[in-house]
Amino acid sequence: MSHIDETPTLYGLMAEFDNPSDLVRAAERARLAGYRNMDAYSPIPIEEINEALGYKRTRLPLLVLLGGICGGIGGYSLEYWSSVIAYPMNIGGRPFHSWPQFIPVTFETTVLGAALSAFVGMWALNGLPQPYHPVFNVPAFERASRDRFFLCIETIDPRFDRHATQQFLEGLHPLGVSEVAP
Amino acid sequence: MDTTVLTAPQDLAAHRSKALVVGLVGLAACGLGFVLNRDQFFRSWLIAYLLFLGIALGSMALVMIQHLTGGTWGVFRRVLEASSRTLPLLALLFLPVVLGMSTLYPWTHDDLVRADEVLRHRQPYQNTGFFLARALVYFASWIALAWTLTRWSRRQDEGDMSGNMLLQRVSGAGLVIYALTITLAGVDWVMSINPHWYSTLFGFLMIGGQGLSALAFTIVIATLLVKDEPMSGLLKPHHFHDLGKLMFAFVMLWAYFNFSQFLLTYAANLLEEIPYFIARINHGWQYLALFLIVFHFAVPWLLLLSRDRKRNPARLVWVAAWILFMRYTDLFMLVTPEFASTGQNLHMLAGEHESLFFVHWLDLAAPLGIGGVWLWMFFTQLAQRPLLAFGDPYLRESMETAGGGH
Image (cartoon, rainbow over the protein chains, first blue to last red):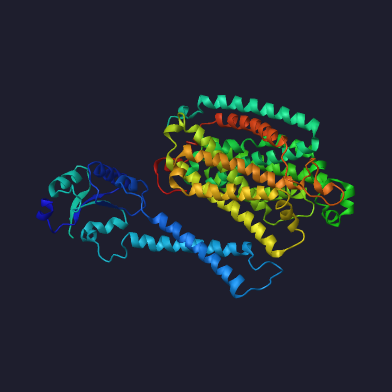
């Protein structure tokens, strides 16, 4: 932990690449070198990057499933309550509890529940909204939403060492390595 | 890319001869059935025929969709193309349905038509001559489409890129032609078994079912191919992921169409539409209906939710094979409740009749017979071309990116 004390004004070190394949390769090498607290930034979605960074599964799918189940049960219950308990009406001689008629609403509320929990859950699990993030302190990072690809190894990583990590990143042949102010 | 390494592995030849043996045994059994119980034979033949016609036509439609949308699942194009090139054989296998017209379709009997106002009204359209002429047009347009698409695809292999844009245009028009012809064919060959029932969703049910059959079959074949060179090094988890996702969508589409049809009938309460469902929720058929809901929709749907299963061909293939079986069960449910257990069409028998749940041994022999020779034809077509449409300018993209293409 001593080297973190030497550089208390650092969020991490960031390497810049000009294509996604180099970024994936760099992330893979960093993971194999033992780094875990790192993140990749890219203007386009790269499916392999999750695996390269060694991301674990999130709890989001479970949240979506639960949201969907709650939405479905809620929708069906609402239909049941309104058609059987609150406003029982004879429509074409069908029973009050005409379940086939309830399915479209149940389906819609299932989708609604799943979609809402996906939306809210994604924000919450990612810690969003986040008005400030240190990576934007690097001037080159401006191009992260256009044509540059970045890998940032953070100081909180147990294996982070100001000099060794810098050397490691430079060994990946990036366009450049920058310090990220906190 | 070295193209000589893209030829089909030796294993396929073994599968091909095995399929032929199974097919010939099945056809011999069908021949016996034809002698012993002709009515039953025609009904069983029609159901099994619809399954394999569905794989071929669904594959042709997926090829056209692939030309229009692109996506990484283009690596399976040669499998889909080989399926669509079985259509001439399927035209031949349609002949028993023509032979069995008077067993299958009530409107072929003049006395029944005279006695029934609805059939009398439909007679200018629903008569033997026009039925055959339409069938001829369906097969001609399907075979012409499949041959145009596969021939131009072949030219890409030879480096001739002049047809690339044409392939897309033909695919656009072809999908419209396919949707129209399969709707009419569905009405002709299946819906008209019941003289009065009609459903405006029927064409979509056929299309959705054929797409699902084609995807499931493609997954089974791709799993077979990925075991050996050359495809073992080329097909990656994300390719199977694409097929799995599409199959997942089609499983939901099947449920959506079927439920919509049921709900509309239930809500509208019309005399022409209800008997179809009455026949299928009574006399033992209700258990098959439940079986379909659970095993054609709920269970595959739950299994296909898993990302890992969709990316692992060894696990995905079991779902695909099961769905093929369920496709057959679904077609069985579509046709059989309109027949008595003697094999006769209920609507041609005098008086009121109800069908009790039954399965005939020909319902096993017919899919083995048709399926065997059909598979033989499929493997023959598959072996004739490189397994990858390597000339396709979009293919490189699907081989390189593991990205979110669909």
